[in-house]
Image 1 (cartoon, helix red, strand yellow):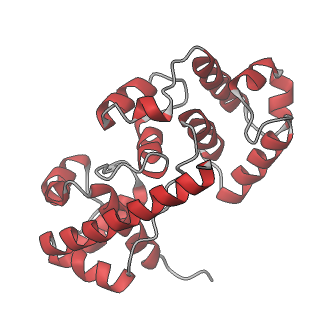
Image 2: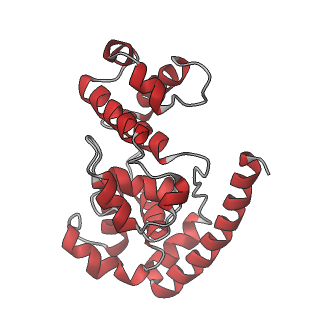
Length: 224
């Protein structure tokens, strides 16, 4: 079975879990259920073929940059090495700092990417198969030791690379903004508020976060 076919099979199975999650969340929380009815079925896509190494490098590239700018840098990064769909840890290890800087990475990001590549070469970044045997908390604790990788970065990896269903990224502005709108709060919720407001959404908090992102987007003022 090709990797592409396997990814499609996994996504098809994942969609069935999404439908079940939408029903569960709607039953547990009328306000969220009303928004789910308006927003429609989730089209949350998981990058089933992406390694954790690749996900971390891509996350570093996107830090503090507009999406288009980050994608342009990643395109230069991928085009700058031969023989791989995505530059391998060994290729990155052989590349000079100047070469990586010329692709558009800041000095801090070059250091972070070199560190991630070095960790991957040593086997310190789990494979997808190894990650499947680790809990969310274990992966967070393990990966935040890497330079430039914080909890939010690992949470995005858990959601969009591994398809973990019960992650609530409490530091994410979009999630906080969406929760404020959903619960009609006067101000953005703090970390302590999340347990009270979202713990009953377990074990589908990642899906709830997806809908909170959509709600935050829907409430943005139109561009002038």
